[in-house]
Structure formats: C-alpha cells, structure tokens
Length: 298
Image (cartoon, rainbow, N blue to C red):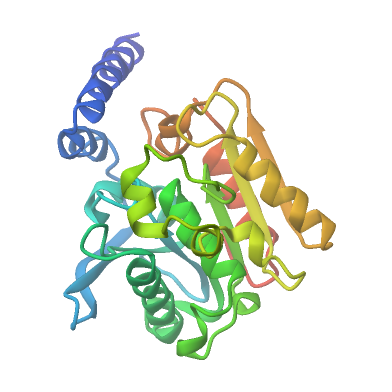
C-alpha cells in the first residue's frame, strides 16, 4: 500500500514537473526522471569523445556481460535547437537492462549549424558505434538507429538518404534497423511562422525536400519500427503514417504502431520506470530488436 501511494505521489510530482518542461527548464525535469531509474548490472561510460574537432561526446550504457549484443544509437529530440545526451539516461538504462548496448551522442544544433551540420554529426556517431562495436560487446552488423521527435527525423534520414553515411563507407541497408518515436518524416511545406525550421532546412521546396525521409525511400531501407501516439500535438501522427505508407509501397519491412491517447513526450517517457505503464514503448522496441536475426536480447 505504501509503495503504491509513494509511486502515485512521485508520478504526480513528475507530471507537475512537465510544466517546467514547457517553461524551458528541461534540465530539472530530466534530472528528476533519471533519479528514479537506477538499475543494477549496467556499465556506464560518460563523455566519450567521438569528434574531437567539434568537441562532441557520447554516453554508453552496456549490460555488464555484453557479448555480441545489439547496439542502439539513440538521437534525442528538442526541435533541433536544444537537448543534451545526459538527459536521456533513462533511455540508456531501460534498454541496457534488457541486454542492449546503447550509445547516446550529442550533436550540434541550430543556429550553430544547419541541417548539414547535425546530420554529419549523427552520421559520424553511427560510424563510431559501427567501428567500435566489438570493443563495446556488440557486432558491427547489429547496429540500430533510434530517435525521438527531431532525433527521429535525424535517424530516419540516415536510414533512407545514403549520402549521409557514404563518407564513412556505410549504407543505410547495413543498419540492423531504424526505430522512430514520434519522428518528423514528412513535414513540408514548412509554415512561414516556423523561423528556426526555415533557417535550418531552407525556404524553397528543393531545400526542404532534402530533410524529408519519405522522399528518399527506394526499397532498400533497413527494417523500421515507427511508434506514434495519436494524441501527439507536437508532431502530427500523419508523419509516421506517411512514411509507413511509402515503405509499404516499396515492399520494405516496416511496422507502424499507433498508441491511443498517448502524447508526444509520453511516448519516450514510457521508457522510464515511473511512466512505463503509459505506453508499451519498451516492449515494442525490444520485440523489434529481438526479431532481428543477430539480436541476443534477453
């Protein structure tokens, strides 16, 4: 009884903290969320440099006894203008506790860079995970890309447009899979009042088309899992529906899950302990990874 009451009180406190998120105080919210997510049997390496030139680092979450384990490179959201890798420790620990190695990199954001800048950073992070897979306890042919919101757009573009991974001698179809959580996949034309998005993606149709994963589907994409809440008021569910439709047209391996009543942040927060019952995000992600023939998820 006491545990249930404590859990309820804590959930209420965290839900109230969402007000802080809307007020721009994300750091406090994520610190509170991560404080609940301590899990045994996980090794963490924080601040590993993967791009010295641009001072970019990543955090690694590993099962203590990882051997040929699947690897997930997770890109967080934040409208391409904010966010920090340390905020998403709960994502790393949730997956690592089920036998998955998780790499969470930072990337440069607007206005420091435009799309080319953060996409190059993302491709470099995936290449780093691929090159160091054996050292991490995984294999280079079992690297998944995963992202939420803006991070979903980044990950999906890596999985569809071959130009980003090409400088690292990698192709999208060499990825084990892509996992998108409320990603932005089909969002043009960009409204005139979205100044930041117009700044990073461009104002003309040709420039904006380069940012749309749906425009690059050719039938050779890696398997994809698209998770989306139908109560999302930040990223239209039509983004996931559109990408799934195009993938199906090209006979690609894609699974679309629409969660009734689930909002934008609730989708990723469901990976944390306090909110894990709000959506089956973790179960669906693990099931998708487990379906891959190289996976060794417990």
